[in-house]
Structures are given as structure tokens and as C-alpha cells.
Image 1: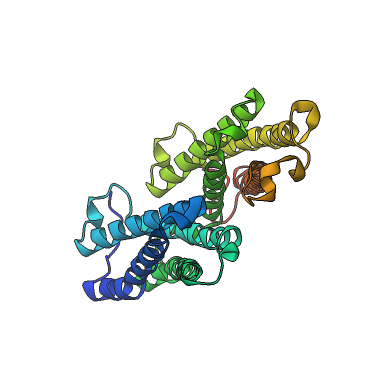
Image 2 (image 1 turned 90 degrees about the horizontal axis):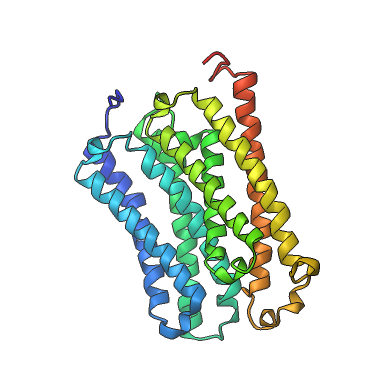
Amino acid sequence: MSTGVTYPNMEDRNTVCCFLRLPQLFSTCVAFSLVADMGIWRGNIGNWSMSIWCFCFAVTLMIVTVEYFDFESRFPFFWYNLPITYACYAILLCLLTSIIYSITYVRFLPDGPLRDRAMAASVLSCVASVLYGIDVTFVWNYYGFEEITCYVHTLPGLLKVLETFVACVIFAFLSNTSLYLHQPALEWCVAVYSICFIWAALAMLLKLGDWENILPVPFPIFQLGLILLSVILYISALVLWPLYQFYEEFGGQPQWSSDISCIYDLMCTWIQQLAVAILTAINLLIYVADLMYWACQVFIGTEDQPRNF
């Protein structure tokens, strides 16, 4: 697939690597190492945070390798959409990890070397988030690709990033299977989150790979249909999840005090149930915004995307 794009020269690439990619690698690697050095004191939250930093380090290293050895042209889709899309997720992941790790773990550590390591890891995670933010904001313009539209720099692209990211956070809480395996209605909610995530990821992949033309219907109509179904499914989850988690008539626990573990653990089962309910509502709002956008594209049209496809 020809893109008609002149790739940046080696000097430009080295500049970006030195001022963005290498600091990203350094901050995520050191944050991981500091928490790993805490041994058994790092706790479950520490292990989860380490997995996020390790993931960001690994993907960033892959991007650096591809750019260093000039492998971009071997990918079946336009390469520079991929690192910027990943950077959007990395911003949210590192920022969320910093917040959760600080609130649920670091603040309860006594003064000493362990607390200092944990605080330093949180700060480095914030630094990594800022670096990824700079990546998203400036790299596209730095390379001079004004004639190419970066998908995640558009409103539907950002909405897709948010939809899939919120779903991933929901999945992190659902790793505790005791939240839903006891009730078929809650298992349905898990199925809803999974189905909608797959649909959103598929739509994003089609757009990133410039494969919209393989669809039997115009891409806006395809998007509108998927998002409408996703909204309907999320509405069912928004009703069923709180109903079966917080109402005694359906076997739920209406107050956090009914879960004894919440006295000692800020991430107890009841808090996780509440977090999933809140995230479900947030993602539903994002899907509704996405639905309104594509409805305007299909039924009204814009200057960028007229109604007659």
C-alpha cells in the first residue's frame, strides 16, 4: 500500500529517540526495577503496576527497534499510526497506575527506604505519562505529515481509544472472578464488556490499516450499527450489574460495611464491584458520544465526510 509519505531522515529519528523514546524506556524500566526490588513488600498492587510498566517498556522497545532498523515499510499498514496510537494508551496506563499505586499502597507505607522506592516509582510513572503525552502531541507535526490524518488525532479515534481503555480497566477488576461467577446475569455483563471491546478494537484496526473498503457497507454505517448495538448492550450491563451487586433482593451487598474485608483493604470486593459499575456508566457515556458523532456523519454529513459516501 503506497502512502506517498517521505519518511523522516535518520537525524530527525535520532532526535526523537533521544528526547522521547529513550526517556520513556528509562522511566518505565526504573519504575519497574524499584518496585521489583521491594520483594514481598510490593503487594498485589505493586505486581499489577509492575506488569503495566513492563508492558510499556516492552512495546516502546519494540517501536525503537523497528525505527532503528528501518523496518517501517514491512508493516501492512501505515507505521506512524501505530506508535502514536500506542502512546495514547500508554499515557492513560501510566497515569492510572501512578494514581492507583499511590492511593491504595504508597500512602500506607511507613517512612523509610521502601516508601521512598514506591514514591520514586510513582513519580517516574507520571514522568513516563508526560513523555508519552509529548509523543502524541508533537511527533506527528515534528515529522511533517500534515497531509496524512492520524486516526487518534480525530474525535472518533480518541473515542475509540477511551472505549477500549475503559474496557481494559474493567477487565482488570474482572480478573477477580468471584465478582460475577456466582450469577448468570453478571456473567452476561462480562460478555457485554468483551463483545463491545472486540467490536471497538475491530473498528480501530480497520481504520488504522486503511481496510475500510473491504466492508460490504460504507464504514460510517458499519460504525453506526456496531456502536448502536454496543450502547444497547451497555445499557443492559448498567442495569444488571448494580442490580445484582448492590440490592439484597438479588443477593447483593448494599453497603461497603457489609463486606468485612473493606475495613482492611481499600481494593476489597465491594469496592471493585462499585468501580466496575462506575466504569460501565463512564463507558456508556463515551459510546453515546460516539453514537452521536456517527449518526451525524450518516444522516447529516460534514465537510470532512459528506453524507453521500
